[in-house]
Structures are given as structure tokens and as C-alpha cells.
Length: 340
Ligand SMILES: Nc1ncnc2c1ncn2[C@@H]1O[C@H](COP(=O)(O)OP(=O)(O)OP(=O)(O)O)[C@@H](O)[C@H]1O
Ligand SMILES: [Mg+2]
View 1 (cartoon, rainbow, N blue to C red):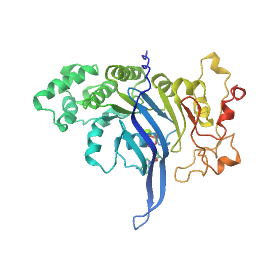
View 2 (view 1 turned 180 degrees about the horizontal axis):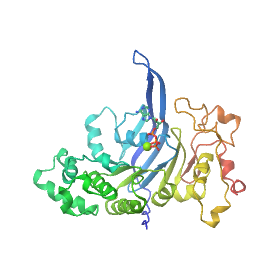
View 3 (view 1 turned 30 degrees about the vertical axis):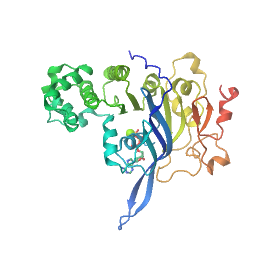
View 4 (view 1 turned 30 degrees about the horizontal axis):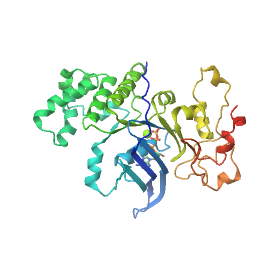
């Protein structure tokens, strides 16, 4: 059983991302000059509110992790602006970045790879505390409190990572992320490497911590039923672009973009109300991000494309309150007659 996410009131965003681009140089010549660029993230804008779970969904390779890493300063953006609590985050302002970096943490998919196998878990949790200058005498107590918070016994601090189950190891990684009292945690597929039976325990832990501590999550997942259950808002990515963004219920009940429709068509439906809904299958394969289509990124696969889709990039437009879509035919797909 997964507990419900708290409702989040409208507030000043914790993070604001404006026109973010992350392009990777590839295929360098002998002189070191790149011959091509992978446009992993190509001009995306969104904000994350305080205490909110904001999810990124989309096919493998669409740029979800790259977006998270750019937010955390683990990758240098090619272009765009990032704001943390209204203050600009300049990538060359090392000191400012370091201070904000502590307030933003990440939980990866594989907890075993995130922990040093030779270091007892108490030491792993203490590492960021030491780095932040916590006095030595306060560290054992703080480590014990963090273990409590994630539902592990304090006496486990002396054990090595291989003495824990996968779910327990992810709890340890979460405890370490909490050590810096972060305001944002990027959760990059945090439960996909775990046994199905313990996934909901970890998701419940994340929700409990959010309720207690008011943390925001950037939640990245392929599991749309988890995203639906956990998120306040969802952005759908395709080939480095955000194609649709809305409150979770709005997005799932009122899907507009053909790509989102195709993505959601893959969810098995047991709800009788949903059974008659139109399913959409995309044509062809995902284009290479080295050579993306000009115009709308979906134009090579979209059954509804118009000539304009092949030449111009559709702008993000608000089609209902808080519901943004980048599609030239969005207003048509919004119409009740198109929603059979
Ligand atoms: N360091 C890099 N150099 C070159 N290309 C990269 C690099 N990192 C990522 N990419 C490419 O950028 C694109 C986006 O990658 P990213 O890891 O962000 O995707 P993702 O949506 O997280 O995928 P997944 O769901 O599989 O984790 C992919 O085409 C990937 O191959
Ligand atoms: Mg990824």
C-alpha cells in the first residue's frame, strides 16, 4: 500500500529551469573538435515547487537523467538559466554552487553502486557530515538519527553494505542524502533495481520523509503507475524536449500530446471507464539524438502530423490552467469530440 502524496499549495518555486540545453560533443576529430553533438536536453523550462514531487517521464535516452545532473551541477549546461529559491545559479560561481549543491542530493537506481563496499554504513553516512564541517562529537548521534529516520536500527551503523538487502541499502543511500538536510532530492529510478515486493516500502518512505521534512523531489521513472501515484506534476520528455506538462490527474485524465497518448497507451487498463479510450501507436523507431528531426521532434512518427510539423518547432502553450503542450494540433486534440 502506498500512502498518498500531500497536496501542495501554489508557492514560490524552489528551482526554476529556463531554456536549459545540454549538448554532448561526440565523434571528435584528431584535432579534438567535435564532429557532432548529441542534443540530450534541448531547450526545456519548468519549475519545481517547495514540497512538490515533480516527475520526468519518457522513453530511454530522452534526457531525463541529464536534466537531473544539470540541475545538480554534475553536468555543465550548454545554455539556459537555473534559479534556486529565486537566486541564479551560475555554473562558474564555484562557491555559490557548492553551497546550493548541499541542498540538492541524488538517489540513484543501484544502491550497491552508490555505497563503498569496504566502508561501514555509518561511515558512509558520516562522510558528507564531515565534509560540511560537523563537529566530530556530534557525528555518531546524527548518524543514529538518520538511520532512525529511514527505518533502520541504530546498531547497524557498524555493518558493511553487503550485510543488507537491496531495500535496506536504498534506505542507507537515502539516509546519506538526508544528512545535508536537502531541500531537493533527485530520485533517478530509485526503486527500479529493487524487488517488486519492497518497492512500495521505499516509495512510502520517500513520501513520509517529504511530509515530515517538506523536501521536493525530482522523480525520474519509467513506471507510469508509480509516477501517477506519487507525483504532483509530471513533465513528458521526448528527444530532449518537454512535450507536455501538467498536474498529474489532469495529465492522465486529459492527455493531449500524441506522444503522451502513445506512452500512456502502454499502461494496462483495468479501469472500465478507461477501456474505451483511444490508444495510439507511434510509427517507426525513435530517431537518433545525433540527427533529430527538424521541426517537431515527433514529426517522423506522429500519425497526426501536418506539413508545418516538419519545418517548425511547436511552442509550449497553456491549453488549460497549468497544462502546457507543445503541439500544433493541441487545441484540436483538446476538443471533446477528439476525446473518444
Ligand atoms: N556523456 C555523454 N556523452 C554523450 N552522450 C551522452 C552522454 N550522457 C548521455 N548521453 C546521451 O544523451 C541522451 C540522453 O541521455 P539520458 O541518460 O539523459 O537519458 P534518460 O532519459 O535518463 O534515459 P534512461 O531512461 O535510459 O535512463 C542519450 O542519447 C544518451 O546516449
Ligand atoms: Mg536515466
